[in-house]
Image (tube, rainbow, N blue to C red; front, side, top):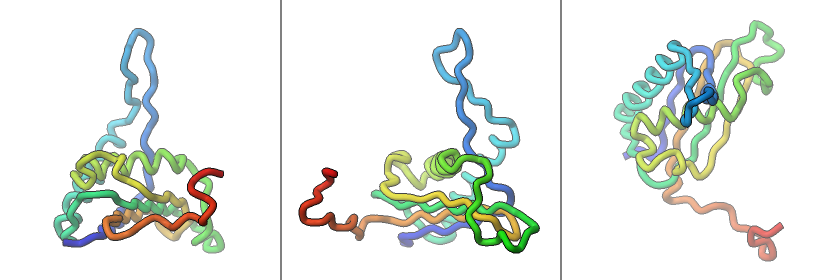
Length: 150
């Protein structure tokens, strides 16, 4: 059983579209285009396949790291942080939802106790997703006088 899953998905990073409220409807309406729905399904299937290939088993709390790479021909920018859309929170939502649909977060994405989303310029586009078990780790110890109250 592996405690870490690493998967790289080539292509342009995609963010989760926000739901919109429509008149006379109680529930929000998804505005995801067909291509985004296909992409989410593709990511979900890749996560399932790679989890099986790498022997990754879901369970407990996890850390999820998402690094999205945006293609630019400007070599001087490669490796620098990027402020391009989609927003970082929408990136996190899409890939966390895909991991949940893939069965890697069986209790839901609330099992992500720690995480990060980075956007970086690169020679080619893609997304690196790393899921790691927090089962054997403890959060950093607080200072003696700082028990969470600031």
